[in-house]
Length: 266
Image 1 (cartoon, rainbow, N blue to C red):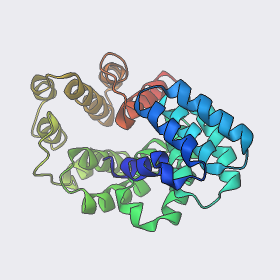
Image 2: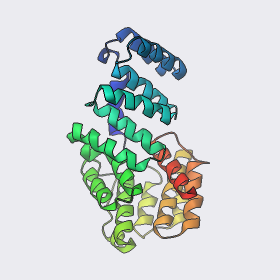
Image 3: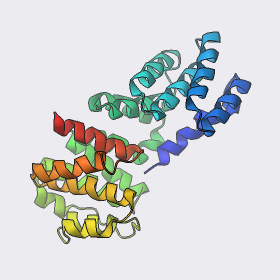
Image 4: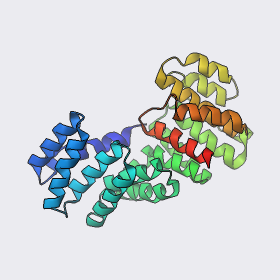
């Protein structure tokens, strides 16, 4: 589920894509060495010299977002978009930053704009499907996950999010009947998660299969979503809180768990 992420990485760190090539080589070196504060300082100096360089501003925003400073990142993305209204990467990154802050509805227009600028990426855009789910736009979410299935046919997570959208709109039985069949998702514990949502497995099977931290993260995230779909709020919150806390992960699905936990608190 990381196609769009990799699409943007090259734009972010390829020095040849920038006018200030020497500066970007320094920024890239600092970033790759894990010296993000140093990279931001270099970019800030560059922006002070050329405040209309949208790519420098974008890059600083992207690094801020990677440090979970999403409010500051959005400020940079806003500024850069005013200078470059046709950069798909800017809208994608701002949409993700909005989502991470729980601004679900604000993320959708940015994802829409990204797709308008890069229509070929619509089938890959599972992030928009998740935003549709949390925004209560279940029919749009269902359609997004159906089209994503065409480019990612072996992903249990896609089938589950499709299930969740259908369950919200039409009920559990219709969600089971329309569950997208997945044959080859080798990740643990995806086989057990799929069986659970298909009505052929048990929650304890999912937990028994998960051993490593990342496996336990996905186990608790999808157990939480399963219980929520079945109207069991206490169990849902228990597992979502574990996915967002004890077994938290530093990736977009980790952000999904954290956003969900905050929504439950509200």
